[in-house]
Image 1 (cartoon, helix red, strand yellow):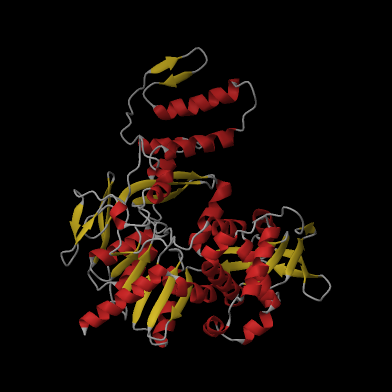
Image 2 (cartoon, helix red, strand yellow):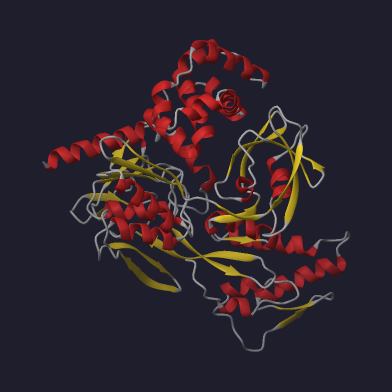
Length: 543
């Protein structure tokens, strides 16, 4: 998926326009003398579509009524052409390439702060531990007023503007104006450095020995981060593991393979890939370590895709653990990343993933299928609420290692379905979430009580001792009104428990980062609770 092969199509790229990507689709093109057609304006080779594409672009350049930005036109042609193949083949311009690759590389270059825009002011949520800002003493709650003299405080400042101002090449410097509570503004010169993007969002353990690892992506650093999390939890007495892959859109195949190496016994098939020009390739687990026989539950939902589905499918087909949640996204196409000479790139589908039982996890696409609206259609059909609403193609029947029946047709069906919780949902709650009202209120609450909260020492103590009383929740509704969210007594009454839990979890995030958030949120998480119950039952049955 991410090897270093340089396909022959790159060698044939026309230097003038970079359009010979199309040559990759002409492996069987004739190399004899082509027939030439003269249009009066231009001659082109009738039998070679690649020539036609080049020549039409040149015709536009020579004869079009207005000036044309040739590079942008070529980029659009490439993107449109690749998108007609399948939903996951695409072109990446040179300008976009770095931003696309950052989350999978596991790092970016910058000053190392997590920030939020509050009241048109950039507020430091937390400095990244060990990063440039942390080393200079920048604190949570500091306001960033400007960068290199350019004001970053004021109406309509955007995340994109902030990142452009603060990110940059390693070793470059930026002068940042900081406003700290009860102090005059001061300047700090920060040398940009490498800032990690974590794969493991949280690693927690409950008193009964249930470990929880939230994995947000499959990146270059995933294997190392996962091992550190496991070592930490094993040191605290972990006896069983809940691996949370919800919302994890995937990433590198190698990272998924490394995870399966730790979860599956040696010799078990993880998956195989196969395509028209890609012979079948099987991947097997190397096994070893304390997790290969540890009770295991894997959490998935409609946001779990690609590498997440590889792991879930391998666990399910090998009867290694229980899959809990809702049907996964259904992305089972293998892309090869190919760099082009102008520092742009293409990712072209070369094969399909198949689970150990032989299932393709790719959901249907093509003519007459609205691929992008699939998740909305699932909701409209009631799939998020009942497994009976899920369309199962009975002809795509497969068998797991121990003889259980599973189905193909798109995505991984969980062994234990947990419906989306709609009983306490309301339009008022939705509006609060979309406006960011809860995030802003939680930040301000954390700032007001930071000293007292930090003195609690841990998210566990905070969870036991901190509560949002009626007066605080009333003040929250007042603050939300200032952001345009009108009071809704009925909506609040229906969603008040969820609102209080969410704000509390966000306060914990401001103090203890992601582990703080998940420690609170898991207490109200139906899928996590169902996984805990299933592991309890499995343990009891073995005794």
